[in-house]
Structures are given as C-alpha cells and as structure tokens.
Image (cartoon, rainbow, N blue to C red; front, top):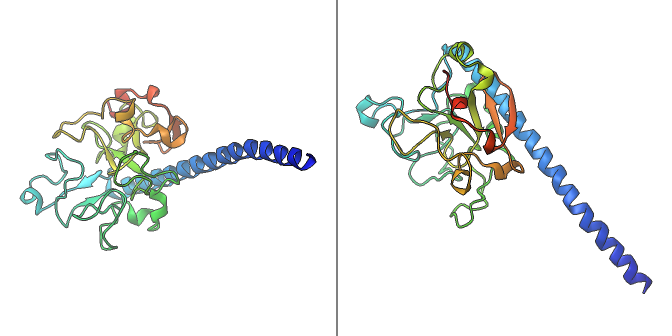
Length: 243
C-alpha cells in the first residue's frame, strides 16, 4: 500500500513537472528566435550601408524572362524556379527536386545576406521552425528558412532604409518575420503590385503568420532592428508599407 502511495505521488509530481519543462523549452526557443531576428536586422542594416538600400527578397535575373523581370514581379507562385542565377535574401534552395524543408545538395545560392551573417546558416532557423501542418508531405520537418521577408509593393523590399525612417517610421514597418515554406511574404498568387497576404488570422494564415510557433504569437523584425512577438489580431495593413 505504501509503495502505491509513493508511486501515485511520483506520478502527480511528474505530471506537474512535464508542462513546466515544456514551457521553459518554449520560452528558450522563442528567445533564440528573437536573437536570430536581431542578427538578421544587423545584417540588413549592414547590407543597406554597403549597397545603399535594403536587399530584395529575391532576384530573378536572366535566363528568367530574358532578364526583363529581375525583381520577380511577374511571378504568380512563390515556388516558381526561375533559373540557376536566382538568389533569395536568405540561403534557400528552390531548384527542382528541393522542397521548403530539403535542399538537393550544398551547391545552392546562400543568399544576399550571407556575407553579413558570418556565413551562419543557424541564424535563419528558428528552433521551432518546423512544418506543423497535418497532412503535409513535409510534416514534422525543419524548414530550410524559418523566416519570410516582406515583399509587399510599397514596402521595404529593395528600398533605402532612410525611406522607412522618413515614411511611417522604421519602428512601425515589418521587415522579416516567422514564416513557413518559402522565405518571402506577400500576396504571392498575383503579379506586382502586391499587397499583404490576407486573411491575417485563421488556419489559412498559419503559413504566413504562424502563431502556433510561439504560443499564440509569431516573432517580427521591424526596419529599425527591434524584434518582438505579436498576435494576428495586432496585424494591420499599414505595418507592411513605407508610407
């Protein structure tokens, strides 16, 4: 009888301890993710200092459209491969045979920010950046890149940082955030001009604004370099635009 009481007490203690450990792990992962975004913010600012403007979310030079669409503005699918000279802001393999969680080999473009992050792949991976969509062929696998860059027309994509400062204010404009699948975010189903992806909430929005990643929030890097967690309820169109 005494042994059964001891076992019961241990079981109760374990049931109390496991959720606490899980919360600690989630907090640590969220903090690590925010740290990644801070590092990405520094790299964005260094890129702007060197090139006079923020990076484009993606470049699509020739042979795509014979060089007539270098900024990928005619694309109507985020996963469309535009050729071997394609390069994203982050290290991402979009070649045929790859998927958002798998590279073919190590011969893919490392991205426009690569020289500014000490060639660290880890910075682009949130510890909780895994595919949580049930039924997905990549369910449970880690995304190549855990973040998406804002490429809304009229947003910071490829623009001078000073335009954000003189516009709505660099602390009020979203630049990069937690994202699933490809490392860019806008209404990717249409050609430019593009607005933000809608809706902001609900199951259909989780690819673009994955609140499941951090207990009801997703982490956002703003143009001034600060990063914080927000909910889908806090999203509004003006956060995506310079003006």
